[in-house]
Every structure is written in structure tokens, then in C-alpha cells.
Image 1 (cartoon, rainbow, N blue to C red):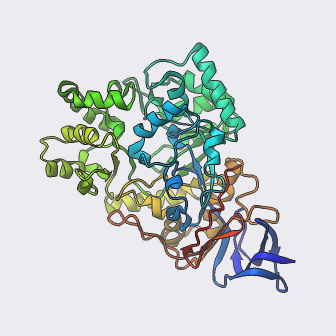
Image 2: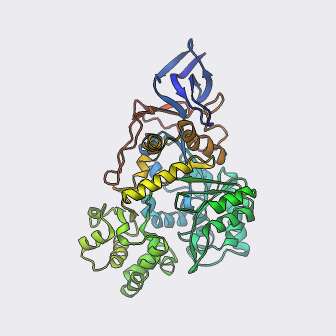
Image 3: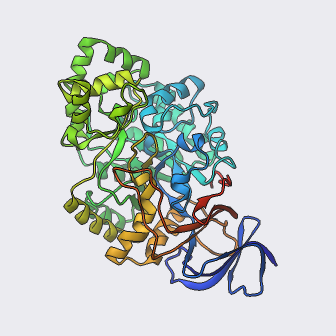
Length: 520
């Protein structure tokens, strides 16, 4: 047989957790045809992988590339990490299903997270949105039905319950999204309008998605009352019959109660990224009453001196409720106008001082007004002792068979969080070499485990008949280079990436091939 691609003499780690094997991989028509010694085989292209590891393409089970990948289909920040599949629609913050007017509203509302770049905003259904990626971007994508879009379409940006006909309409939208190959339901319970939903409503919205997974961004407070967010997520899972995938569930969370529930039969998996600071949109720090109605109403309130003063009095409380102790723990990552772009990379106090504002609260409200809400933030690097303790705990979590690697990557802005460029090589390289996790274990957490969890039956393993998503990397050299000061820096040591049988990265450089498919 003549293969399209033949990968010779590498150490094949197949994604199952099994030990490496010295075999060749033959690829034809986008499929892995043979995993064996293929000494006499011929091919149109041969990759010599001496000293290299050959692994399934990495699956990022939590990413925010919902707009940026359409704006830049090559998607080099993730492709050069060896990522061949991303799960989009995370935290309830995505763009389908939505009618034309609501799509434009959410485009503006979420601009601080994803920008408002012109990507031809002309879809409405999940199927139409997924089709925008299928065959048009460099990597595969899957889609969680986003709570925010469902609620926006049914009751707008209003603090009202979903009941009666409204709830039934919302359930039908989730059901249709699943029929159009959604892989589950996501919600961001710290974001609007999702924050208005109570636990019962979430149980009802998850019922039509019960064949997939529930992926929540947890909340610690609801209508001013603090409660256990992990217990709420488990109650939603058990009450609706949907499997639970706890996203960005890092070392700071107590996992013992989840383990007890798992022992009693609850179906739970996890993912987390190897950094100990976050990133999001600055919009999230406006109080609930200010968010009602959407962008136009928010901007009108920000432009009203009396209402803006009221907001300034409340945004610090929202910050504290979001577990950020100080404004110094937040930096501007994205502000597109010439008025404020020079502030990118400064902490909130530094930026406020540079602009001549007396308080951080005044600055936050004014920059949101000036930028039409399109402002992103990230946290600065944590102290070394926090990084050391957190890294050790994180790598310990990856010894578990239910923990996947994810990036939670946000690509908007000039100073994004380094996790967008460095997550997977960071885990495979410096963290593995420091803490001693096996390559077989880590590759499973990046491939076989998330593929199984999200129902990618033809991905995540190097076996005959599986789709040919393959990464070839040097285990001794692989490392991240992205830092908080220089976050847009690509990794080293990842030499070749194959997506659906086509060479997407060759000798460390993107080829321009756009072979990604919409999964499953």
C-alpha cells in the first residue's frame, strides 16, 4: 500500500495510557491505516521521527476561540501547541442559536472576551455556526450549547425566571442544538444573563442535553447568598441525568465531596490549566442591575453621571465576590482604541493613575464607556511560592484518570494570558520533567480521556481506523516560551502536526492547510 503520510521510527504513545511502542504510523485518506513496523511501505510524504514521540492530536476541552478562530483560521497559537481539536461554547458565552438582532447584541456584549471583529456574523442556528468552522479552519471544533445564548434569545438580558412557555421554548432550543451535533450544555454562572437562573431552571435546561455533558463555570453566590457551587453543579447533574464535566477545576477547589459523589455513582470528570491566575472580560464587574437590557442600556447608564457613580460604589463588591482581593490583581489585556491601548499590560491602579482617575472604580467604569464595553483583563503572575505549590498539586491531579488538560484560552488583546500560547507544552515539558509524571499518563489526559468524554469516537487514539490527528514532538526539548510579559510566544519542540491526514505543521511551521472538521 502507498500511504499519503508515513511516520517512521518514532515512539508511539497511542493515547490510551499504554506504554510507548517503537512502530510506524501509516496514514491514507485522512485515516490511520496502520500502526506497525512498515519497513517496506511507500508514501507520498515520510516524516522521520527518530527520537520523537508520536501522539494523537491534543484536545483542548475548554477554549474561547469562538470568534478569534474565524478571524484567523490558521489558529497558530493552538496549532503550534499540537492542539488539533477545541471544545467551544464554553461558560455559556457563545453565539448560537441566536436570531440576527440578538447575535449582534451578544457580539457587542462579549467583545471584551472575543473582540467584535467582522467575521461575517450571519448565522442563527447551531448547525449554521458549526458550518462556519467545518473545513474552513486549521483544527477540529466541537460545540457546547451555551446557556447565555439560550436565555438571551428567550427572555433577553432580563432578570426574570424561565418558566412555563418560556422554559419549554428554551428546552426546545437546547434539544435542537443537540440534534445539530452539540456535545452538551455549558453555563457561566458568574456571567450575564446566566447569573439570573436558579438551580431548578438549570436542571430543566440540562434535561434535553442529557446525552452529552454539563460544563459549568461555577458560582459562589446567588442573589447575595453564598452557597456551595460544587454541590449545585452535582445537584444539576443528578437532577437532570446529564454527565458532569467540571471545567477549570484546579487545585484551589475541594475535590473530596466530588469523589464521594462519584463513589455513589455520579458521572463526573474534570479539566484544569497549569496556571494560577485568570483572565476574562471587565464587563463582568458591573453590578447586576447595570447589566439588564444589554449593551445600549449599559452604555446609557455608564454615560449618566449619577448612575455611573452608583456603579462605582458597587464594582469593588463584585470584584470581591469574584474572589479577586485587590485591583492590583488585575491587568488590562485588551483595549482597542488609541485612547486606552497604551494601558494594556498595566494593572488597574497603574492604568487609573496613568489616566488621572482618582479611584480604580471610576477608571473601570470610564474605560468600559470609552471602549464600548470591549475591555479584557487578566491577572498578573502570582508569587513564586504560589506557582510552586500550585504546580505540584496540579500535576498530582493529572495522575487521576478523570482529569483532562485544558487551556481556558482567550486570544483577544495585545497581552493575553500566556495559557493561550503555552498550556500543552508547559505540561509536557517543564512540569513533566520537574514532577515526574509519565508521558503516557499526560498524553492520555490530552487525548483519549477528553475524546471519550465528549464523544469523539474516532479521535484521541493512534489506532487503525481512527481519524489521522497526530502530533510529533521532541520529549526532551518541548517547552513553553509564553510569559506574562511576552505572552504571544510560540512553544519549542513540537515539530509536526497532522489534522485529518493533512500536514498542518511541518518542521515547526504552519503550512496554511485548513483541514479542521466540525465534530462529532
